[in-house]
Length: 126
Image (tube, rainbow, N blue to C red; front, side):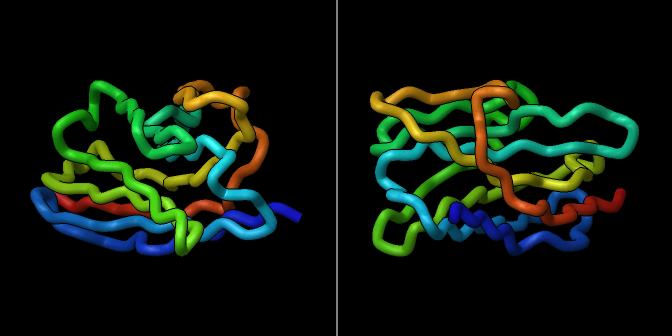
């Protein structure tokens, strides 16, 4: 059974940093594209960042480009999201997601992912 467990959320002041981690189990990690999404109150869940199975390809939402960095560790079966220069508008529940793929493709749509974590809250105060 596939399990994704996020950690690292919390409360931070604007301009600060947080590092989210997602531990994957029950999967052949190296065969999965991994993504981060977020959902703010009253809004739809949106794409944040994704990384291909090899780690060689990444993609970011325009709103986080240059501030967030996604990475993966195959030895530990984890994917991380380093978030710098945080803004109040980054406040949301952040979700880790996984999708099996034959290729080194990066997926950016909600409905392309079939495994999801439970989410971790990130709150950025002004």
